[in-house]
Amino acid sequence: MINRIIAAFSMVMLLSLSTSAQRIAIVDINEVLGSFSDYQAAEKEIDKAASQWRQEIAQEYDQIKAMYNKFQAEQVLLNEDQKIQRENEIIAAETAVREIQKKRFGPEGDLFNKRQELVSPIQDKVYSAIEDFAADRGYDLIFDKGGAAGLLFVTAEYDKTEDVKKRLGIK
Image (tube, rainbow, N blue to C red; front, side, top):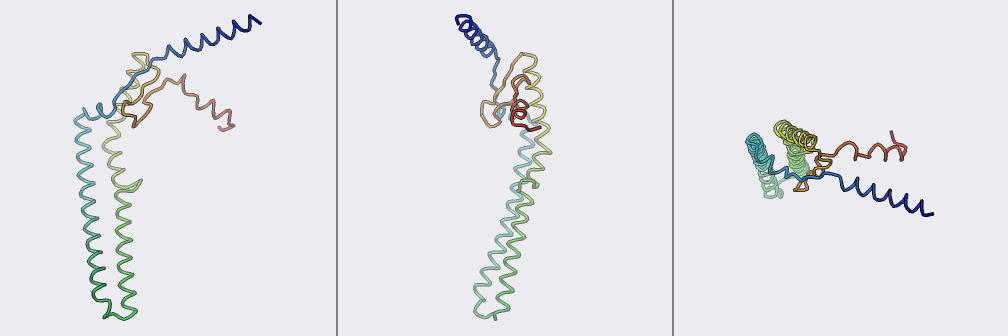
């Protein structure tokens, strides 16, 4: 009985020693990225494109509003077929503008693609530097100070994804 208690106590001590031996660091990704002139230039270019696209879309909506106002003013003079035709024109114009919005700002839109093209190489460079830093200094975990990215680096030893997938029977 005492041997079991001593063995259990030893296991707990070993686990706590191995846990306390983890080396953890914090990095502010926003500050690092903001220090790159290339990143700042990329952000300005992205903001400029997004602003231009927003203006184009706003102009299209203004035209639709003008179409609607004109329809409201002339509605009493139109027969039923003409009313339906004008309403359909307005609906088609609104649908077209929504498609433009989706094309520019949707999940796979122009803004996303431009960000991938301009910012991803810089982010990849930073994440690679973090991994190299962790390997050189012996850090096991590196977290983002801002919390936006969360965990930036972890040694493979602590990634238990495959173990959980095996337990769930997922390959």
